[in-house]
Amino acid sequence: MKDSSRRGFMGKAFGAVAGVGAVGSLYAMKKSWDPLPSVKAAGFTTLDMSQYTTPNKVIVEGWRGKPIFVMKLTPEMVAKTKAADNKYAKKDQNRLIEVAGEHFMVCIGLCTHLGCIPAYRPDKEDFLCACHGGKYDFSGMVTKSPPPRGFDIPPFKIVGKTLVLGEKGPEYEKMLADHATL
Ligand code: FES
Image 1 (tube, protein in one colour):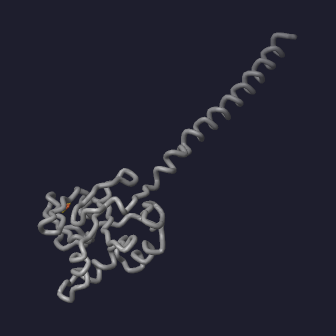
Image 2 (image 1 turned 90 degrees about the horizontal axis):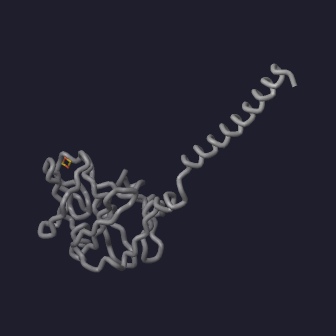
């Protein structure tokens, strides 16, 4: 083989190898962009609601890296959401989640003003955001600005005694239709 034709052959061979390498690299990159199966599964959080036995106490769970406030309501709290003198009653009622005969508030625990984490005050049955003084009642409805709206409610689906966060069930769709959450 002449030098020039050998160079041509070598060039094509390198080109072919480089081409295969490039495809392989692209495939590897594509694989690294795809979410791992465990990450996909992490999009859902399943809560067994029968574990929340103490009313008027906020338990902080997690969903997609966000704090989730879960609180079982007392029968008196549920009655307050229906009281005629409660100006927030209708909105409060629309925000409650009923699972196996018990009522819960389940919200993303971030202030809708600038994202601080408000603290629950069991004696006052409300949330106070220390950053700028915003307040929310026990259903997560805003009662004092500057927060522009109540706590956001994560997508959820009721399955028996469990709540699956990250799935949209009919109860959540109704909340959206009632403008109880964004
Ligand atoms: S961040 Fe909560 S009131 Fe401003």
